[in-house]
Image 1: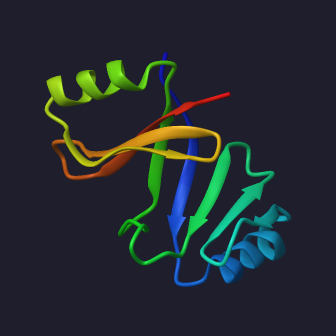
Image 2: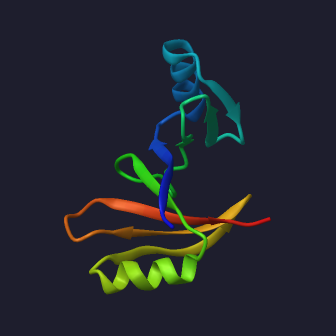
Image 3: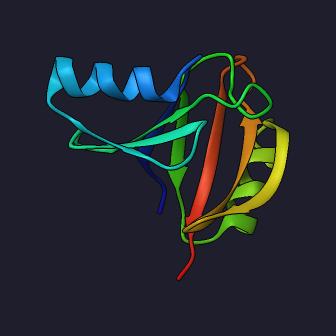
Length: 112
């Protein structure tokens, strides 16, 4: 099963974007380092990526799966192009891809 459950916003300042979401919408930012902020209360997971080497050009929609390898195979078979190979991060593993229309997305699998 595939579910959109996370959106990651690029930002020049993770702290400033987190503060904006708090002040504008009442969401709760949690600093996860100098370049990343998690934001709670949005209805789905929200992250803010300020690392210039890791942030995307536009908001990154992230799809959750139970089988990352099968998802990668399905993405490529459907015409998607993997732009970032699978990598580990706290709580999971994900890869990025570009769909044929040009939007970049990611698929992630949680790990225990």
